[in-house]
Each structure stands twice: as structure tokens, then as C-alpha cells.
Amino acid sequence: MMRNKMAILGTILTIMATGDMLFGELANKGFEETVKAPEKIYEGAEKKNFKIEKPSYLPANWILNLGTRNSRDGEYRMISDSSLAHSGDRFIYLKGRMYNSKVITVKPGDTLQITIYARDPDKKDVFCELYMYRDADEKGSTYMGTKSVDMLSPEFSTRAKAEWTKHTGSISIPEKVRGSVITDVRIVLASDTGAYFDDVELEIKKAE
Image (cartoon, rainbow, N blue to C red; front, top):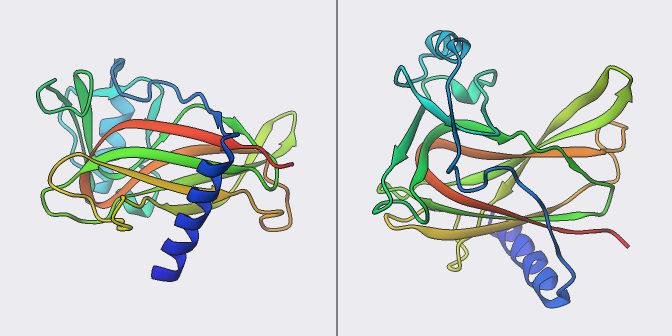
């Protein structure tokens, strides 16, 4: 695990040194815009023993994924309190998976650098994932799998702290996944034990 963390850190330092990163546009990256959760969210949550108050509000352009095994016994909350948020008025508590609706076009060799702010009084791990897709046909893209991204703090740890802490991780798009070229990805916030999240940033280093 430490070898993986140091490899990720080395990639991050290399990217920062080049200075040729492009800022990726994530929709509603600070969770300030909200929408009322649809009825189907509560129906799905009940099947997975997933805790969500009714009624609840979700961050606009972020999708709570209740279709994965990680969602069982999970939890989601929207907190509106500027005195507790990292910035702005709102942040979320998540035990499970939530992904951004923005589809990011990529090609093999592109490097994505993801930054989040997280906190957890129990100081458990936080991380991000990529949902990966390939072009299919006129019916749309095909899901090809998930890759995990360790989100390291300046102390080289994936563990959140009781106070807001900046975590950054990077990942390169592989040549192929299951024999197919990846053309699109989505950014996923992930916690298996529960953590608070705010302010998600994305930078992209395009392959030469």
C-alpha cells in the first residue's frame, strides 16, 4: 500500500512541476446548488438499508449511486451551515458512492488529478474512484469498470482528520481496459465508513 501511495505522490509532484495542467469543469463542485431528492431515491435506499432523511436535498449534478454493493447500510446527509463547511454554505456526509454527472472525455495516457476536502472525527480512509466508459454505438457509452484513487493528505495518508484536510490523488488512463480504449470517465466520491466532503477540484494533464 505504501508503495502505491508513494507512486501516486511521485506522479502528483511531477504534474505540479510541469505546470501544464488543465482545469476540468466539474458541475457544482462545492455542493452549493441543490435539488429535491426524487421518490425513487427513497425506494432504492430502503432496499439497501441506506439512511437518508425524507425529504432530502441532493447536490445538483451529483448522483447518489445506490446500485453498488458499497451502498448497503450506507448514509447520506446534506448539511447547510457556513460555520462548519470548508467553504460556502453546504457540504455533505457520505457513506457510500456519489458521482458527478459531468462526463469527462479522455484518451490513454491522460492524467487526472483530483483534490477534495474531507473530514471525519473517526479519522478513517477517504478516496475517490473513476467510473470508466468506452464508446459503443448510437445507443451511448458502455461502462467498463471502476478504478480507485487514493486521496493523500500532505502527510502521505489517506486517512481523514477531525478538521477539514486537503487530499489529492492522481491516476493515468490506461491503454486499454478489458480490451477496449477508455473514452470517458466520471469522478466518484467514496467512503466505506462515512466522512464529510466539500470542494472537489479536477485538473487534467493531456497525453502528448
